[in-house]
Length: 161
Length: 252
Image (cartoon, rainbow over all chains, first blue to last red; front, side):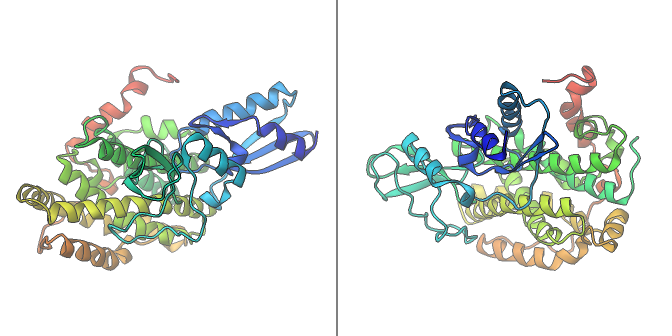
């Protein structure tokens, strides 16, 4: 078993809150190392309080055990802090297909001005940019709530972080 | 009692602040004025809970001897908690909750910006991670202070009342406790007194836009950092710790 084999096993672990994204897509796998037959998987949370982390750890353990890797440990690191830039392009496309607007690319930066105009977020349903932010806080820590003014559908946006 | 040194005390102080405010904000779950804001305040609660867990876990590692985050959160007594009085006060109305969040987030933003340079790598990592979340909390609560202050007659009365209630508890944020001074001396922590000027600047700018007068000459309450709490603390801990006290070692 090599690092790349472990990496492909981890592509079977999905984010329980956004079940189309693997933890690799999400960019929370920070490293895989093998030392004297012991596999170490290092992961990082998206947000400090992300309640999915315990489930994700359990699922990683399960996948490793199912493949006969009993000597392993899962380490959590906080630094460098996760940002939406860690997400893969494939992951962004899967999000969009699922009906969640993927994070805008990095030229649109997080800013701290008050009552700021919305980021131009594209509706994942009808692809219109005529959308408005309903709330910066959504159904999970990593998402904001938007509504499309063209097709009127509400949708989640994987927010800038 | 859990054996502590000044670093552990400092981490517990940071953790307790976040945990108690997380618990207070979580009381809004299902009771927010509108659905989106109910979700917003409980998201903030969840971020704070995550921050407190990171601080407790780090403290537990330093304490060793079988200490865990759960033991620190659920099995310490009132006098062992080192949070500021501000965060333990009952949630009050929406204006009270908003103003407290604003005062606390403005403080946390300044604190975490500095703690990113802590000589304790894990503390620096927690601060950098948390700061990204606090930026959201501060923007959201600032907008709400302005909306309520410069809003309707009713909202103005309520936020002004909240200012009167909360202001006496803001001073303690910047009063340097012994363990804060010791942690600052080691390059691990920050003397919170050094953050006061910038905090006042932020509050002034938001109050100005909210058409709220700044209180002057108010007597400041303190004691929480030393474990001397308000009468509200026992009740909130009774609720927060109930399960572990009633069913020791129970797990989900």
